Length: 371
Image (cartoon, rainbow, N blue to C red; front, side):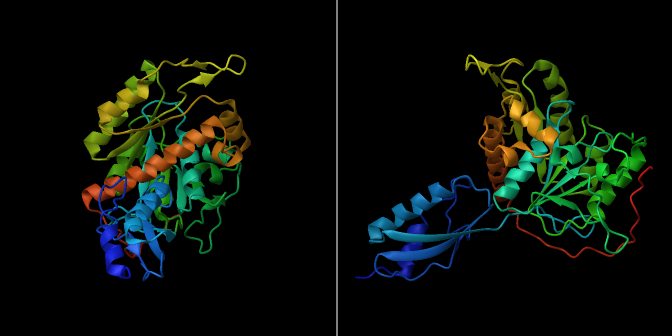
């Protein structure tokens, strides 16, 4: 007796998403399952992110589920629908599915390096990604991305994001005539500039918008917690105790203002000597695990000290683009995969769904850039 489509669908009920631990069928991830043609069948699987690191596992599980029914040739078309945060009519960026804060209470731990490379790694997987340099006093994104292009404006009211390597970007550094010029603003001006970077930049539809935050727990993260439904934060640390004491404060702030910690990235974890091929943990070890334990969040990955990573950032071609097979390039790409999976789990746990709302009309103002 020939296998029916209904039998195939029933077999798929036993195949779970490895991250969400629920049936592909129950999650609505199975699309366009064909009628069997002898020992062949085709179907579409809609992933929760283009950066799914377990696609091969899902494919193998589907093939195993079909094998007892005499199906040995399975053609899978992969698509993705990124799950997103809830938004309301007051949200400044309603077409952005996920807002991710890359933050740390400590300066010099590599937040900009991590934020830039995570954004580019997610983009390389096929996601629609933006990167906002929220460090008004010390913008790093123009240097790291190798462009000083000034954003244009089609209507004289809103700004077009600068694009490089397929990534949409905005930074106060793109608006300054002299990159060495200091920004001397008080808190209210920081607040105004940040909101305008969100509201008055034509980001379009994005799966992920990553914000590179300044050190500390001051005006910028507080403003974001009050004005935007943030998906969550990625906490960046280095292993040594002197960094941890400040990083712990960022975890504490997230708890106080209701921002979920999606995970922790430990940067500068070790150095491998060229001549002795030995791993040296020159800043100690275990710091990332300590932060993750405090935050009740996963350690998304550890990034080694890599000369190529520093050179890539200085040259304007970040490591995941310029040298993706380098140790730090591979580590950062793996962190991006883990982050995308963690976001999918986060939304599944809270029963989220993608909501797209029209942006309400509002009067626009130009960014208050000091010249």
